[in-house]
Amino acid sequence: MSGTNRFDPYDGHDGHDAHGAEQNDWIGGVGGVGGVGGVGDDNEVDGPGKHGHGEHDRSDGHGAHDGHEDYEKRRLDDRRGARPEDPDRGTGRDPGRDGGPADPPPPDAAAGRSAGEPARIPKPRSSVEDTGLPLPEPAPAPLVLEHRVLKALLGAWALAACSPEEATAVEDHLGGCGACADEALRLRDAVGLLHPPESLDLDPTLRTRVLAGCLDRRPPRIPVPEWAAPYDAESARLDALLQDIGDAEWHAPVRLRWFEGDRPASRRTTVAGVIAHLLTVDGLVALALGLDDPLDAPAKSPGPADRTEAFWQASRFPPTRSVRGPWREQAHNLVRTVAFAGGGSGRLPVSYGGFELPLRDAMLDRAFECWVHAGDIAEAVDYPYEPPSPRNLHAMIDLGARMLPTALAARRQAGLAVPGQTRHLVPAGAPGRSLRLEIEGLGGGEWLIPLDSPGALASPDREVAHVALDGVEFCQLAAGHVSPEEAAAGQLGDRDAIRDVLFAAASLSRM
Image (tube, rainbow, N blue to C red; front, top):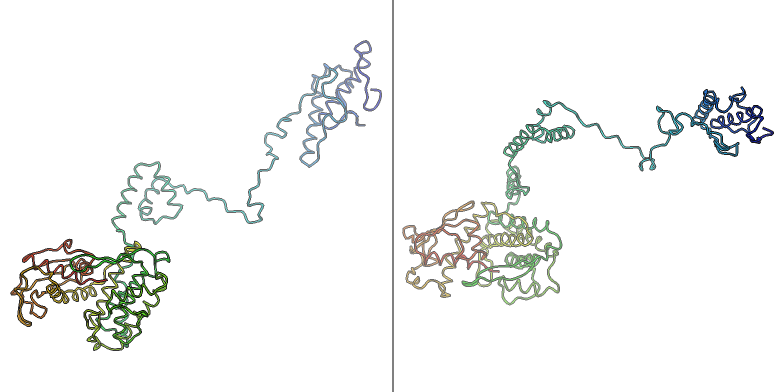
């Protein structure tokens, strides 16, 4: 070397001994460069050339040993945060240039760390770490149980009485154990037998039983007459149905059905239109009690059909759910008024246009209409609806049975009765032919229907026919929802008399 960062190249001729030391010094410096710095540093690094050895003498390991020490020093600096220098910096030339061999790489240089040292590259941060929120709790380790313990838990698992961890452990075990899976299946089937499926709908008699229990403990100061209780119950059930339906369902189409003569008739309307119909016909009872008439427009006749048509035509827009409020308020006023009037008001006549009914029967008629039209609404909005309680149903059936003699007489006057039946007419008060009407099911019973005259006495001795019907089916027949030919009736005796009675029951219906 002739100066700093300079050296005289080897000329390849004589003077080998003189220049060998310089060349070996540079080569030794390159070995040191692999560790910490370049040849241009003031501190000279000892190498094998100082002892007069040639470059072939580097195989003795001393130069490699020095490079390894420098590399260990560099790695220590890296751990302390020191920035390593470029191994080629300070020499201005590449290792192995000018024919000199490059120093071997230090141990573990490719890996950059020792075998036991962890990676210095941090793991990616999760998104929750950047929010400053507390980190979520680590997922608990799965519960590990022995086979005998898992088998003992099968019964609790079938009853859904296990903790979430136990249930998970049992279900994981069932996927790999066929014997336990078969046992679990048998236990689950047995649980189904212990707990039969129950309907989510409330018991239709729940309201009646709750009210009965409350009234038994403290009777009302002003009781509702017994003949008005069915209307009170059915109007409350219908109001509960209306409360559950949405605004759009108030415009659902509903078809009102009834019989005119021997032929079925129908009228298309909406849910709101049905409530408007009940409002106007209940107004007939309100007028008899001295209450306000809900119908402002004049009707052609005081009958239910004409009053309903007048109400519909007087509305500028189709009825909406706003009609529910006036109907409910009027129903409350009817029940409250008859309660204050007492039981003696039941004989007050109520005009239906072509005929009259006493108030006690008119309230049963309005209860029957509430139930029938509530069924029409429930069918239109796909809502479950149960029949009335057996006590109220029996009262409605009794009203229909008592109205049958008058309906039979009206059919004879209209020429709709079977020819030849007029031969058996008897004076009022005399016994005549009778038909036994047997109503089966809850609310049922037996009635003798006089066939020859409304004033004739029904006599079991002159019974000519026997008809058996289900209670709900008889009410559907009287409402005009079932035709007389389709009524599933058990029949015995005079076929003509049975036909007249079934058609007379259908003629009780009206819009």
